[in-house]
Length: 312
Image 1 (spheres, rainbow, N blue to C red):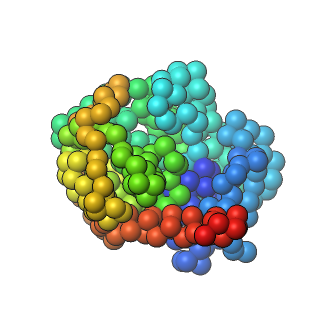
Image 2: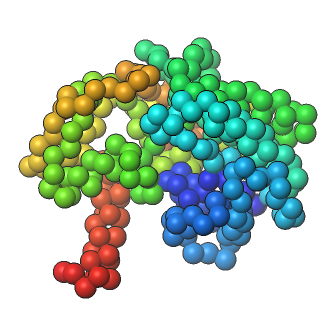
């Protein structure tokens, strides 16, 4: 079995590669030229790295073979960049280019990675039947990309699935994410400043997302969209307090110091029954277990960095 991934150096991509290698799969990792995140990938002779910007997938002339192609790469996923309509429109084209690359490499299965942003603001558990009403350019583009990629996969004779992933946290998350902001701020002895954190939320660990994606790749039903989350819904404030008690129990959190951002949903929770029934997926990580893994990794990295600079 050989899988190919775009956007492989983030939390989801790197954990998917690790899981694939543990299963004996070979991996093709399509990475951005000059990325400083190659260190997030495991060292293995089962990985073949191909450098290509997301805008150049249609120019890749390397002949490879893969069974499952997972498209994770996307430009402008954070903050106000999500409403950059021109870049988000370009992402749709790049997703279609990824489908054609998958077909060129002989893949029989294409998995596109969507987002909860496709749903817009909802007050119910999310599944494939939940009405779509995206409020951001990012959400609109993700939804359009999913629908168009499905059509193209049908035309090319490839199996298609779309995975709408909820809030993910993992060891290789970007520094601007809430979880990384909280852990680093608390470790530094500072006080995190947050919104009121009244949202009902569903966090899923990146290793569980990796399991879900490979399960969809092998057992997902053609044409279906799956909502990927833990299936657990809690107030965001509860998650924050649990994290604080793991990282720095005696610290303070300033709730309400920041306003909610535009398009802020107040409920985000996945109904994963369809995913479980079709693929057998069951999350293995509690929130606390995932946070402890991230904390251990950060502490180890900080200790190594101090050692490399001669600091104690």
